[in-house]
Length: 362
Ligand code: F6R
Image 1 (tube, helix red, strand yellow):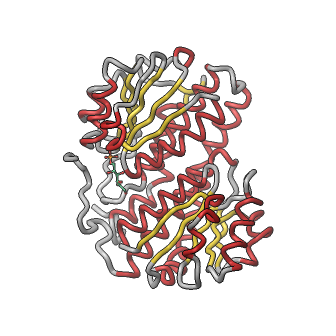
Image 2 (cartoon, rainbow, N blue to C red):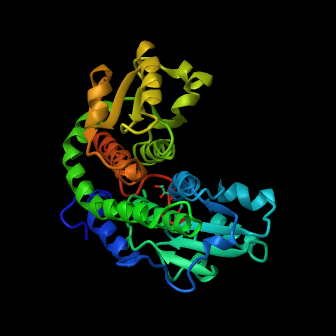
């Protein structure tokens, strides 16, 4: 049931505020963050390895920034198909965490089995609780996204981010790198996030508008820095998979090491840049793009739009949220740009060619 929407993907994007608010209440109590038994003791580990495929991998990649910044915990992230055959050494004190919507992705499951008997503990973050990956973990944490029908992952991504952020916060408190007060502030910001996401859905028409232009492009670049770098990857993946437009993501700072050669007026460049601690740097990369005739779509907040919006080809202004929460909000532009571009091109949004919802063969 598409609930009145044209596609499952549109429904699942729009559902995110309510699904997230649900997911939050499953983990956040009056006393802080509560995990199902047997929980996770972050004081017992000195390293975390996170492994997944596709969008779930980009959720892990985002979480690396959170764990390192908030909890000062070293994190390695990898795609499962590489990890499983590389025979990476897993030292004692390493916990392994696998993220999978379906819980059945063959490479992710094989990576998990590789870690059995080597990692201190095996954890997973899944949507399907009765899945192989959940069964074979010491602790499986549900993301509570509800069934996801669209082949392109949307609400599962934000719900994966949600659980991973909560884990990073829990790790930070246990490891003494975040005070109870700071935790409570972030949790209170998180509680207002569903409302903010709802408000951000008002930008839907702006994204639909600019997507008509994107649908004419052959190539699109996505740029971001810090927490927005994994998001740029997620935006590029979404666009490729449902609109079939070639899209690549780069860390803004990497631009001048090669990809800037691609820039001309035919290549739209999507820049995710809330006015965070790295904003000025991203803006200077944006100016380098524009100096070479590139058309920049800047997705930012009102402070960012004021500082740099006038220079861009198009600017879409998102609500303002604390820096640590920006990935959860900027998932929306990543999804809406892909969705509307695909609709403008007339592709099969919910069932893109060559793709399956669950990849149970390697
Ligand atoms: C992209 C997408 C895929 C999956 C990937 C992993 O929109 O849906 O990249 O994220 O195949 O699937 P799970 O999470 O089921 O392991």
